[in-house]
Length: 332
Ligand code: NAD
Image (cartoon, rainbow, N blue to C red):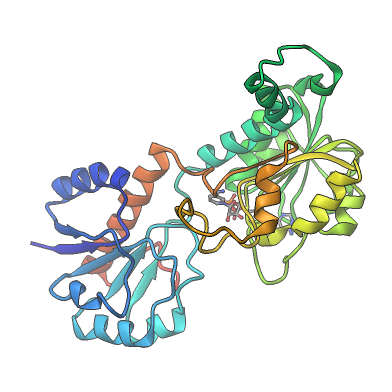
């Protein structure tokens, strides 16, 4: 029987792993830990390997995997930047990812958080906590249907965001994407540049992948072109946004507030439990403390639908490599 080692497993994964293994007649062993130089020997005797790796894998580990006869790693995330793909190929390891596991989950979260900022959710909650039940202008909101939304990046996630705002809330939706998609064109007006898309928008929501070319795509200059009082949402990647420039734009009143599910220095923090640790990230603490910002720990995807799809797609890719030598989800 095929035996798969599945590492970095979380409680919520287990039910889907059990179900998949039963259907596919596969034996498995679980580990809560990522793959490291210290625990690599645990992988010996298995045919396949699935990880949710956030830390790099050394050359020694790739060499050992090869010596154990392991031919693939199925990563349970869209991102695979933690892998040295050349090194993986050198040792004959096929690395696969799960490029899309629940775009709706992320889109729904982005829309919800945008609305929470528009509707002054933090301020209302803080008033409730001190039993201040007054209606007053500081928490007077705009109606979502009257707002113009700019969606930056209309791929899998952004196109759903655009559809929800256009068809669910009756908003005017504009977009910028160097590769407009025909389906989104039904309810979105594409603009020729990023700047033209954000100018005049009440909500700007970001859904583009991070690359080495778009670090701080949203910087002081682009924020200065936002409509006064606009709301900014980043459920994409932290490196796309200059956090200090965003804070200055909120402080100056140019931007009303922001919903952030990612943070440029989140590596090692999102997800983790820092309750018992000395917390030294002053920039993140500022984001957490502010009433005009909602920051969440890269959790937009985190629904049972996404958890299930991550498990099923990664384990299917494992079997595909074992049976055919490759997988349609291969990244190297
Ligand atoms: P996708 O590849 O389907 O779509 C991305 C779109 O962005 C494409 O249409 C592309 O043409 C466009 N694009 C690229 N560069 C652009 C630019 N400079 N300006 C405007 N558009 C540009 O990607 P996706 O699956 O929709 O993912 C979008 C983002 O969501 C990624 O950053 C991804 O990392 C992030 N994400 C976040 C979470 C979370 O939990 N917060 C989970 C999964 C993905």
